[in-house]
Image 1: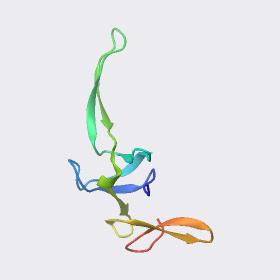
Image 2: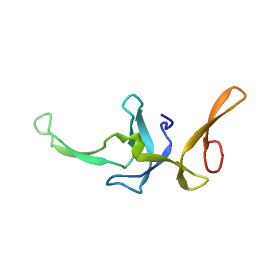
Image 3: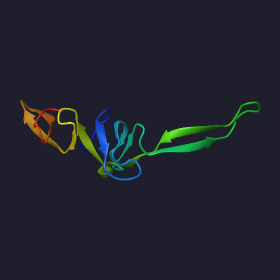
Image 4: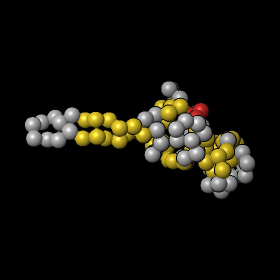
Length: 101
């Protein structure tokens, strides 16, 4: 998986199509990611102790990595990522502008 935590991504499909957000969490074995403010659902939490109130919590659910694309800050477009090796170090590059990400 080429996407990593703190990358900015663009959502391609689903109810949040067209939104951009930062990756919070990555699950490489499942091929899923959690994006801030995308695929949000509400969970109703019961009161644990007497006197405490129940509440509604908003959580971001994981979505499949194929539903998002890396968002290049320089191009200001969703782009594919490539890789190149410079001095025995692998770096990720934008396929459109060839800049290091």
